[in-house]
Structures are given as C-alpha cells and as structure tokens.
Image (tube, rainbow, N blue to C red; front, side):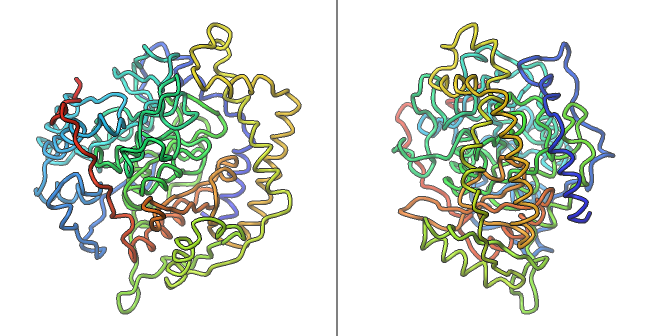
Length: 523
C-alpha cells in the first residue's frame, strides 16, 4: 500500500478516541474469559520461519554448541532439522534461570513446570503447533497471563491473577511459543525495575554486579532475560522508550510498532494513547518473527481495525546480496541524520554512519528539525501524566501508599487541567504534521537521539546495537513512517549482515553458592 494511503489511515486513526480498550485491562476485567485471537483470515501474510540456507545465513557454531546462544530463528531451524528438542531448549533456559537469576532478577514469576509440559507437547507434535513451536519466551508482567499472577510490579495488583491471556500473549502461544515466566518491570511501568518502595531489582545483564548501570526502562526484566540468555525472545511495552532503550542498553534489537499494529487488549495501561506492545529480540529476524505473530486486527482493541495489511516482515529482515555477494538494501533508502546525532557516543555513531553509508542503496540525508521541536517534544510531553492518572483515580482516593515511589507522577497528572490537556493534543497534531509533512518528506527513516518524539505520535521505531562505549553496549534508534516496520527491518537487517555487534553476549555473573539448576522453577 502506498505511503500516501498509509498516511491518511494513520491520521484518521490518530484522531480517534482510544479509551475503548479499557475493558480489556485489569481495571475492568471481563466477566468471563473470551479468546482475544482474531480470525487468521484477517491477518496476512502468515508468519513463517525463513529458509536460512536459501538466504545465505548459516546457523552459527555457537548456537549448535549451546542452545541458549541460538537466536529464535536458529532454534526453530535446529528443531526442524531434529538437531534440538524444545524440551532440551526449555531445560537449558531453566537451568540458567536457576543458576543466575538471583543475580539478574529478570523474572517476577517463573512457570517452569508449565513450560516443560508445553515443551514436551511441542516435541510430540513434531513442530506442528506453529511458527514459534517450542520457543521459550519471557512476557513482561503487565500482560495478562491466564492463571499466572500479573502484578505489574505494584501493590495495587499484588493478588491479581487473570482468567485470560492478553491478545499478544494468546497469539504467541497459539503459534507454539512457550511462556517461561513473567519479566520483572518498573512499578506500573513508570521506571526501571525496582520494588514499589524503590529498591533496585533487575540489573543490566552486562554489569550484573553494578546495579547503578542503567538497564534502559520499565521493560528491564524482558530485556535482561534475553541478554542474559534466559529466554529466546521477549515482549515488552513502550510508552516513553521502554522497548528501544533497554534494547540499546543491553545489546538487543527492539521493535516498537506503529500504534495499532499490536493489540493492547489485556495490557495494564500506563497511557492509552502511547502504550505500544512489541518484541525485544536478539536480532532483526527474531524481532520480525515475533511481530509477525503478534500483529493483526483484534475486535477488543479498535485501534487495530482497518489498518493497512502487515508487510512480509520476515522477507524484510532477510539480507539481500548484490553482485559479487556484497550486501545491499532491498530498496533504495534515505536515512535522515539530524544535526545533533553526533552529540553523544560520537566515535561509535560516526563508525556506524560510515558503515551504513557503505551499503549499496543507502543515502544519508542531513535533517534539520523545526525551531519549535524542543518545545513540542519536551514540555508538551507532560500531557501523558493525566492519561496515566485517569484509570487509577480510584486507588489514588482509596490508598495512595499503594503507588510506592511512583506516586508523584500520578499526583502530577491530577494537577493538569483540561484546557492544558487539549492544548497538548493540539501540539501533538502540529508535531505530527511537522514529522509527516516535513522531516519524513526528506527521508525514508530517521535516526533519533531519543525515543520520545515518535512515542508521542505512535510512529514505529527500531533499536539495534552498533558497538560499545566504555565496555557497555551502544545502539541507535531508527524511526519510520506509519506502518513501515518493514522498512526499519530492512535497514537493521542489512547493517547486521555486515557487522557482528548483535551476536555479542555478556559474560555470565558469578553463580551464587546457594543456587543451582532449576532452583527458581515454579509450577
């Protein structure tokens, strides 16, 4: 579908009232469990595992030696070739969880016995359960999971056990994915993972002995689980950067789709106009596979309806070789480089620009932001605070102590007047016009120095690793036009085909003396 059509659909959707999904959250649980999975006939194309041989991609020796090293795609291929079983893969991850998660604290809940039972069933089926058959996943703890506590790391939901899965979770498991457990998160998705009283829990997998190292954002647990090789892939949510920032900080590839691409039904809300479910994965191909399964229309979330069809994301994430075997872009792509892009991590970012510019089909374009950019993406960003307050007013009246250290942001939301919120929505509309009619008229994708502008607008973003600074991972964030997740994946896949930063893994922490294989398994 043309960019002009995508633009019209997106503009129409961005003006719609989005509070209808409230009935799918923990704030108003449905009276009975209802399957949120839409008919397959409304979703195209069907997700598929790529033929790695045909794509010129080999399963790495490291993945053959250690199943927890394998990417999602590599694990799926190994299982299809009967070189690996789901049971062995799940057991390997549970052993790492039992050995190391007392240090990482990536999981809020581990469903080990249930995961093993699902793995044995996947092995008996011979991989016929779906494109993710037998693949172990981590799910952020603000997604409903049927029969498993969903606490959102908050005292408000301390005893909440959903009676159905969130749409995204239901689609992943319907495709054969296996939930290893719930990833730890920031309290009510507001900060990095801490206890409600502010004590740091989940660490950055690259510095497990130094809790002061920033792990990225509220999807800290799902990111650490993948980076620490305790899950094949994971899903998180982003409202202010919590998919792309943890991915950048922990050497992962995170994909925040366009608003509406993935249903938010069954996700405990932070902001109805900015909550985006999406994958945190090891590379572009894994992110593409995860999103291809998660995406699609859902009657429970009106924002997912009437959108352009999902592109072939797996094809987009498959590198293309030109004459002589050199990697080239699948489509000629203009990459916008804003003037402030080299203000931080200068050496790593300059090396990235040199390397990406050398790929055939890439054109770097200098971008200058409009004069009111800082105002539109800074001060008016506070409009989100009233949106997070509205669903939680009951608990603010009943017992503010339930909010722990995150209370202040909810109180700030109460102070925002109605006219200020309306002014902020007008500012958002103005920003959207400046991005679509201005910035993205001069480039196809835009390098960013932070996730907030595209968060505000609901436009897609991808984060991927480009090197290391002072021993810690560095990454970039690339933003795209509405519903053009495939274009973002094409760029990330081409870059990852000519570099190996995404294959780097952190060293294991010292195993605590009291831990052991399977020590943290739960029924």
